Image (cartoon, helix red, strand yellow):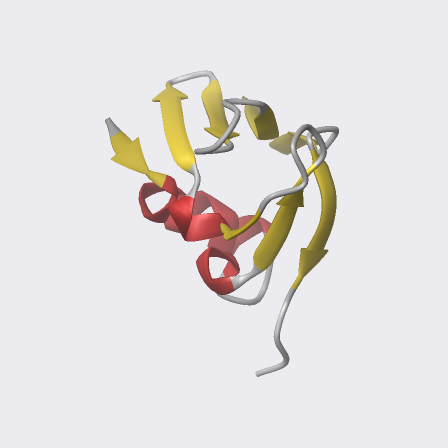
Length: 83
């Protein structure tokens, strides 16, 4: 199993900052992690980043022909540091 760092390429295209260093809180258990610490489940259709504590799907990215579909329902907040 890979960790959230393996999602860096796609996340870099979606977000300008290095999102693996951003802090996020799980909507399920409230635990805070850096995105790079989340567990990654990926396929050609997209990817799911899950909370290491409670296994909640925090961030889903779907590949579509002209971009990406994002579902952040499992995230309470994302804190991104300024460059």
